[in-house]
Length: 280
Image (cartoon, rainbow, N blue to C red):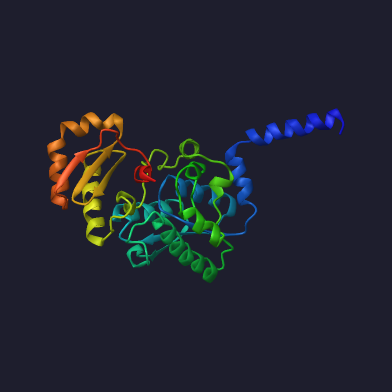
C-alpha cells in the first residue's frame, strides 16, 4: 500500500472516530424505513423519538407500557411529550407481576420483563406494518449489569443510541440544543429496581414505594430513590440535596411511614444508579 493510501486511511479513521454522534445516529436511522419505539418519556427515548421523527417522518410509532412498576405521573408526561412531538402514540397494558419469575426478583428479573415487553411491542410492530423495533438504551448502559440486554439481542431489537455510541451526558447535551424539555429530566428506572434481589415484589410494595417517591418529588427533590428493604425505606438523594434531606428528616420519616414502611433511613452514600447491583 502506498504511503498516501496509508495517510488517507488514517485520516478516515480519525474522521470516523470524531464524527458528530448526532450525525452518526441520523445516518444509522436512515437505514430503516419505519420503526416502533419503546417510549417511556425519559431522556433517552424522547431524544431518540425526536431524531427518528426528523429522519423517518410519519413512519414512527411510539408505544408505552402501562403497569404497576410505571408511575401514573410518568405515563401522563409520556402522553404529553408524544403529543408535543406530533407522533403517533399507543399505550398498552403489560403487567410485569403476571410474568413468571418476575415477582421472585432474581438477578434475571429484567430479562423476564424485557422479553415479555418487547414480544408485545414486536407484535404491535408486525400488526401495524413497522419494519423495526427500537429501544432507548444508551452507551452507558453497556457498562452496568443489564440482563435485559440479552432479551433485546434474542428478539432482534435495535438500540440506535448504542450504535451511535451516545452516552447519557451527550444525549442531554443534544437534547438541550434541540430544545427538548427532558434535557435535564432526572433519570428514572422502573419501580421494581427499588428492591434488593430475592425480596419478593408485590403490588402493595410497589404502591408504597411509588407513594413515598411521589411525596419526595412534591417536596422538590430532583434525583432520588426510595429503596425498599422489607419494612425499611432507604432514601437516596443526590449529594447536593443531602443537607436539605437531613433538615426535613422528620418529614421524610413521616412520609415513608404513612406510605407503609416501619423504619426509615437516609443513605449516606447518596443517590447512584444500579445501587441494587452492588451485591452482585
